[in-house]
Amino acid sequence: MTATGPEMTARTRAWLDQPDLARLWDRLHDRLERNGLRVHGRLRLDGVTPAEREALALLTGRPYTGDTMSLALADLDAQLRTGAAERGLVEVVTELRGPLTDRPAARDARRAAAEAIRSAADDALRSYGLADSAWSRPWLEEVRRAGTLARLAPDDAKRLIVQAVDVMAGLTGPASPDPAGRPGRGELAERVTGTAHGLDDGTLLSRIVLRALARSLEVPPPQDARSRRELWEAAGVAVDRVSTTVLTLGLAPLGDEPAVRLLRDRTRAGFETHLTLRDLTRMTWRLPPDTEVLVCENPRVVEAAADRGCTRPLVCVSGNPTTTALTLLDALYAAGARLAYRGDFDWPGIAIANRMIGRYTARPWRMRATDYEQHVATARDRGTPLPPLAGAPVDALWDPELTPAMTVLGVAVQEESALELLLADLLAP
Image 1: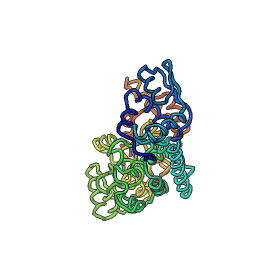
Image 2: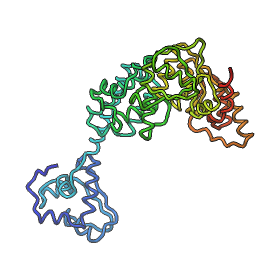
Image 3: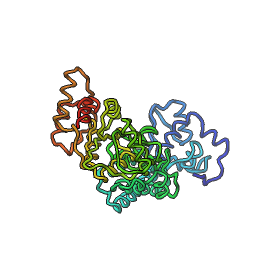
Image 4: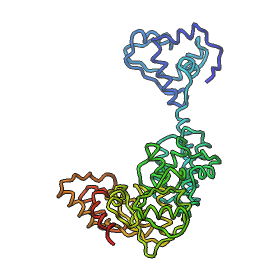
């Protein structure tokens, strides 16, 4: 705040800024900020030293006794205006202790800005029919608690949250069965922000969207570059078309396209194959009649199946399915394949299985309550330790008895623990 009176003399300033008045000005600075810069109320000082008492008496023109004193801010303001300072309390405190912040006004402004951001987000969510989605409310609350948007200019914050909703609206609807129709991250960013770099790692928009994606997919927020890439891929966004692959074994599509012939040759040789998204866009999928494709979560299953000479079609999604994995499975499903899915018996594994089984009407592959109980009993007979279940339970939509059984036994069973049973299925004619 700029002083309104004559310039304070160096001598007056030095006297006011003496150490024996330092505590007074510090306390007044805090009090005026809490008062909204209004000069009212009283200030109490405890443990006043003799030197402080003498300086306060000279400042206010009244004697004090004891080690506690109380003074009215309005009286001190009047005293300063008629004394050597020739300016009011707010101006003197600003001169001695620096600028004052109107805390109530700042608090009201933050609340108004937060409400404007929430209102803009609500309007955007409603416009896309996403206001009642399970992820939207917790996501907005998480963004609010983080406080990042509150530090932006209000218009910038509103624009950013609406852009985040625009991105989510394009990712939470039905996925395109055409691999070429899946957006790349740069394409999606340009569509929403006007620049291909709008969703690059490190941008605030990218961080906010990834938190929403983690909520919508019921997975932890990403903590590093790899997990960020995997989350984009799981949401159907290709970060690029060559670096992420899907692991396969035994796929033998029909046709004479070069990519199809290469895959068929590797299958005949008993080799596993990593397919990129770029590979998949080069293939037109035609399959032998009544093809069933078994889908697993852990690459160890594919490795063991290849070692044993398994020939049944097998696809590994390597955890939460990436865009590349989903593109392949979508194409196989569209070509008439029946899918069977097997994953981990833990809560993230059940959430993934819900999505996979629901998306493809897949057959649960040794994923029922009886299978879980058998795996646990076998592990305990062998003395194999099983990790405890962590996180909130997830209902297994394909088997109402599975989640209660897992809750009772309280342990997780990873897919590779049932490797011999899975291999037996893969080796069956």
